[in-house]
Image 1 (cartoon, rainbow, N blue to C red):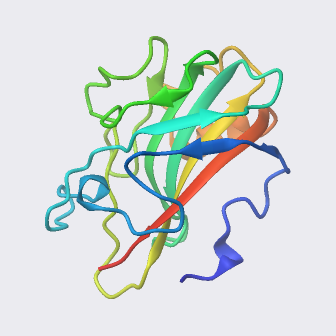
Image 2 (cartoon, helix red, strand yellow):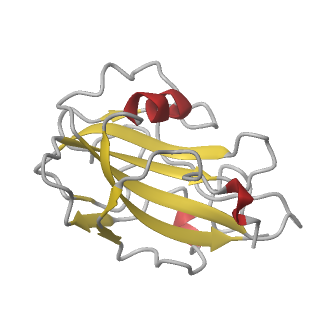
Image 3 (cartoon, rainbow, N blue to C red):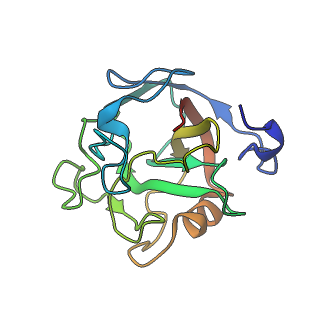
Length: 179
């Protein structure tokens, strides 16, 4: 496993934790074909975002954001696979495939940002062949604001900056994959 030195939370303020689970992926286990990237040439990859369900968010949560990040990508800045913000506080799950490019399964008002493959939607795991196992952080962020702002033309990294002082809690599920 890649070094914990590239822990994406190492330089962020502490936040309460709550729970996230999925019928499609499991914590600390290998991703399966639907969550791998056919667009990036992974055999059997389908680029389908997993079902996510969360509970126990901190009191005062007004919105959620969901991000998927690979800190082990050999880029110097990791790789953002998916980012969605302004998910209403009464929504506590996203169905499998919610990260489709048309966003049709996202709740009203949610904004899907461009990933590092330059389109709004979920792009599956596709680490370089022989690079070893990569970790994929599926994170639900509980936010203390009704609207994190217009992120339509933003990047996932800038969304992270915008959430910095508004994050009440994080629910984290980490899966792996290597080629």
